[in-house]
Length: 125
Length: 125
Image 1 (tube, one colour):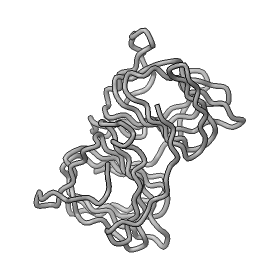
Image 2 (tube, helix red, strand yellow; image 1 turned 30 degrees about the vertical axis):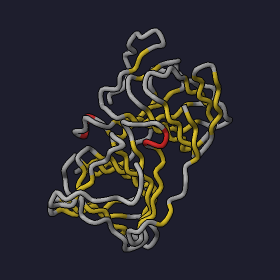
Image 3 (spheres, chains in turn red, blue; image 1 turned 30 degrees about the horizontal axis):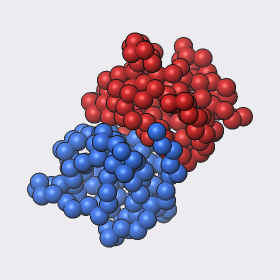
Image 4 (cartoon, chains in turn blue, brown; image 1 turned 45 degrees about the vertical axis):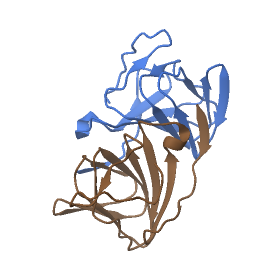
């Protein structure tokens, strides 16, 4: 059992996206991974999909999730439930940064472009 | 894909423990479950174990996790990583309620007493 402080997200090579892995393989987990991310105003993830379920908690700010030809706006205290293999894109659409926590049921998070090509992520799960 | 509001925990038959399932089988998930709980000052879970990994985020308040003969104090912005099958007990030890989020890699969360007897939980995962 470990108690760890919740780190502030740090800059990544992805424009406008800061990241901190709050829990994952570094803590001996194999079944859970937590990604804490900050998206600057106007920033967005590329369209992508995961080969596993994902839950995203919006902690602060305003976002849009674009999936299946639909756009869903969300704000603080919202939870997004994203089934596995569903292509989605998350964008920061408010005047302040979008603060989110992505939760996955594995530390080997399969992350793919819409055409199925694997994305080599710049962080560890 | 669904966007759902984060519900306030409601009273349960467990003394001093309020609960809301923020995501789980009701949203079509099978690989993730999120339990949002409030423990009143002085309240504690019974000693128990899960047959899966667990991550607990402390959102507010002060707690103690008692496991393996050790006591770890934690506060806001702490993350607890609890390996599967480790007996633990979480207690609210501050003057205000302890606000936590428990995260599991399944919606069938095996929850057992230290002797291995299954606990029939009063909420749905």
